[in-house]
Length: 158
Image (cartoon, rainbow, N blue to C red; front, side, top):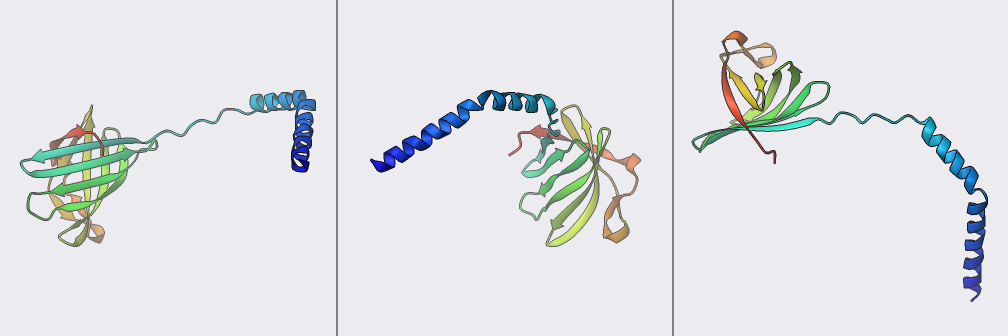
């Protein structure tokens, strides 16, 4: 009984404190909300996924494009019954082109390769051409004007 009286007294005290200053608190809260400018939400990165399926071979591309044009993702080449190449891509979007570095593992070795993708509508095309070894062992596209474009089909991201 004594505990019940203590709890009731505390509740009454709290209720009286809240009700006596309620108009001042409400006015202060209203002033605070009007004085604060709304914060702009950061742009959400776009995620896109693509596939090339040739017989039992497949190539998958997963891209995330940030508002500043930074491109990240993964690229996996999986030939049927052979070792493939699996790795990550990083780079920049330049207009409708994505110029990226593909950092991957193939047959147990680490490798880096320059890649170019071209976005056209809902489809992306992979640029293929002759490569040459550049600085630091990175494979570079020898002549970008001679690239052939291989279309990739847009698919739902997993």
